[in-house]
Length: 578
Image (cartoon, rainbow, N blue to C red; front, side, top):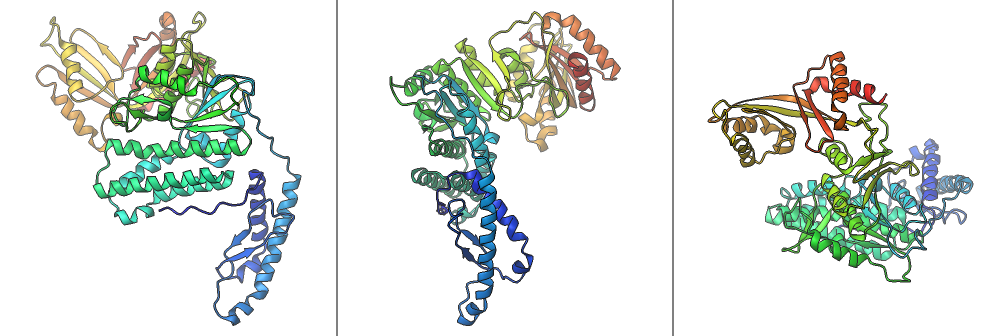
């Protein structure tokens, strides 16, 4: 079983404690003469009364545990010197903390509201550390006129660590599972966070129970020598189950009443397609609505819900909604509760006109439609999980706002069913690199029906999905993303196998290292957009290999070589936005 570190004393102001600890270490490192002559070991320094409420008792490895009386007498002087240094350092830290401004107290949001009015979703980077969790708590409580529900992802890279632990468990003896580096990293992160935020004993016990269950699951994987899709879903669920319990405990420790919920306990029901389960909307929406309905006169409470998870309709097992499924959890709950808005909090001021890592002057987009957002998400922009649009579209009244957790007062980007397009020209320019263009040409089927059916039947048999398509009577040009379909070292072999399937009906060639530039725009003004776009591409000496207009009427896709793509995007952004 994983050892649970002892809980530290309640420290009141955690940020003050961190400051005191930092100043203490800084003061200690200045005493080189004392530190050099102390051998590695352990010494416990008792704090002066003036500082004992700030920081836990100091423990530093400075003096060995010696058995002989002579050795102990020899170290008395050194031990006393260390106590003096520790006391002086604590006094210095206490003075700095006393002069620091106090943190504002959190207030219960929505105290005058009967029902939940908004859903907030925060991703893994937003709750990666105890400090980030405090910032999220401040955001949740910053809008007193809203009664929020909060959907959380796992802390930081926890999901990746869980998957890594599962893979390593296959090659580890059951007796040595506790030594797995990913498991230890997960345990240390969550115990350290619990210590930092000062969780209550019941939450600490629950944390310990979940981590032990996680270890037992990994032992089972090791014994069975099999990591099934069902076991993988159960494995990755621990990330959200841990983060939500810690965050609810943080709010409660600050006087904000919060209750943690696993999504399946609210009634989120899915298919049994482990790893990418489909939501059963007919069963889920009324169940979630009933579970979260607040009784009249009930005390205000902030529900904290696991993102990304559900329970299989037939198996009753834990399922996941696929990577990015926490967005879907948020919009699903928003639709069930009929709130006007779901807010997805990220680290930018909403959706931008292009990738800011490529285009330095990329600017926030105030308004988007769900069709536009879906195209953006599909072609690589980090907006929302594509399936997250579905509950909002079915609702008809639900809007989604993308906001910046580092700039909470910025309006962000509002995504809704429709918007006024009368003055719209180009909304956003997105780049999807490293795709493959495939040209399929047949003369045997000239004037005959069935060519497209035969072509896409071959793709279906190979379980290959395509991005962009352009067709004529006897030819099809299309793009696909091999890295999303096959392992990187098998791409060439798989492409050759796909090409050979067309031997009897067509000649096929393909080009690797191509890129899709998607211009999200008002296609009612296609002529103006294309005239300007091709003028820019001519100036940049960029050759377009293929072009397609999406059926959604919001997207024009241009296919260019990978090495020319970034130059093209920068030129197009300058012309349309700068």
